[in-house]
Length: 351
Image (cartoon, rainbow, N blue to C red; front, side):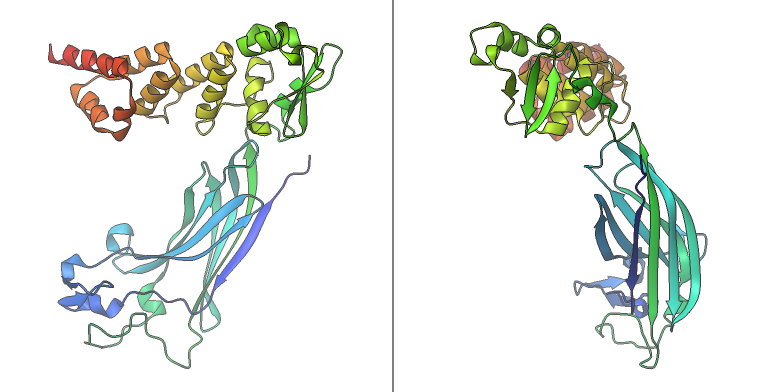
C-alpha cells in the first residue's frame, strides 16, 4: 500500500492585527467595540485566523496569536502561531505524525525559522509554536495618544513589513489498514448465498449466519417476504461505509468502534435487531474514559442498555457529581424511569 503524505504551505504578507498595541501603555483605552476600559481590563491573547484549507480530507486552520506574559516564559508580548488539524472521513485514521515549519520575515529577511515535530493525537488538536518573536522586535511602538486612531501595528512606508509562512508534511496513523480487513468479511466465497446492495456496493453474506445474529434478517430470509427468494437484497436509507462497518461487528474481522460512530451503530443495531452489535457498543461505552457519565446515561436510556446504566450510576461516587448531572441539558431528555434511578441514587447519598 502506498502511504499518503499530506502536505501544504501557507503565506501571509504584511501581517497586521486589528488591535492597537500602543493603547495598552495608556491609563485608559478604547477596545474594538468602542468601550472605554482601564489598563488592567485590556484584551490579552489576541488571536487572528489568517488561513484555512483542505488537503484530501485533512482540514487545517492557521492562526497567529499575541501571547502576553501570563502565557509565556518571557515578560514581553510575543507572536505565536498555531495550526488546528481536523478530519472526520479519513478511513481508519487515528492521528498524524510529521513536521511543521514556521518562518517569520521582516523586510524580506528571515528572522525566525522554527521546526516542530508534530504529533496529532485527535481531530481538532492545535499544534504550533509559542513565542516566535517579540512583538516589539517586529512592530516598534510609536507615541500616539489618540485612543481612537486607526487600529493596527505601525509600519514605515519604506518597509516591506512582516511576513509569516508555514509548511507541513503529515503522515497518517491508522487504527487498521485502509484496505480494511473488515471488508474481507463480505467477499464472495463458497459459503455466501445472498448479496446486500447498499448505494450500488455489494456485500456478500450467508443467510443463516446473518439470521442467527439479527431478528430482522431472520424474518426477511425465512418468511413470506419477496426478499426470501431474491439473490440481491437492496438496503435503503443507510450509508455504505457506516453500514458495512456496523455489520462487521458480528464478524471476526470487525471494524473499530469509535466515539464518533458508536451512536450510529446503536441506531442501526436497534433498526436491524442485532443484539451482538448492541452488546459490543455497550461494552465500548463502559470502558471508554473519554465519554462523560451523562452521555453514557443518555445512550443507556435511549437504547435500553441496562447494564451500562447500572454500572455508570454505580461509578458516581458523590452527591455533588450527581447534582451536576441533573443540571446538564441532556438530563431533560431522559425517560421518567431513568430519572427515577438517578433520584434513587441521590437518596442513597442523603441517607
